[in-house]
Length: 173
Ligand code: SF4
Ligand code: SF4
Image (cartoon, rainbow, N blue to C red; front, top):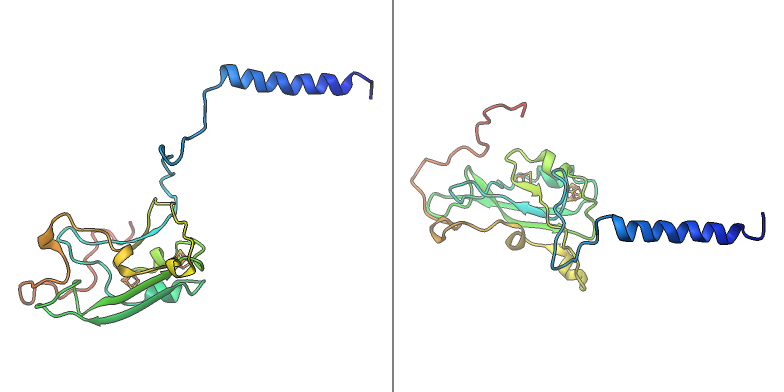
C-alpha cells in the first residue's frame, strides 16, 4: 500500500457522501410526526374485528390460542343470548388476552381463525415500560364501532344470529 492510498480512499468516501447529500432525495422519515406506510403484508399489532353490523367476529373458539407457537393467547368463552349478544352464534370471547412479550408476529393466529376475527394490523407502535402493559386485553384489541347503537353486547331479534361462522363466498380466497 502506497503512502497516499489511505488519503485516496478517504477522499472517495467523502466524495460519495457529498454526492448523495447534493443529488439524492432525503429518505429520513421525521417520526413520530411523519409515519412510514407499511407494506401490504406487514404484521403489526393485533386487532379483533367486528362485522359491519357491529357484532364481534370472535366466537371464543380458542383455535388461535391452540395455533400460537408462543402460547401468547388466552381466551375464555361465555354464552351469548339474544337479549345480550356479543357475536353471532352460541358463544363469544368474554376474555381475550395476548401477551405481547411472547408474540413473535408469525400470524398463525390469523390463519387459524375461522371467522377472520383476529388480524395483525399495521400499527407498529408497541412500546411499553411496564411488563403488565404487555398484556393486551380484549378492550384494547377490539376495533371501535361506527355508531353507539352498534355496541356490544346488545339486544337483537330472536333467532337471527344463530350461525357462528359466516358463509364464505369462496372458501379458497
Ligand atoms: S402472531 Fe404468532 S406468536 Fe403472536 S399471538 Fe399470533 S400466533 Fe401467537
Ligand atoms: S380470534 Fe378467531 S380463532 Fe381466536 S377465539 Fe376468536 S374466533 Fe376463535
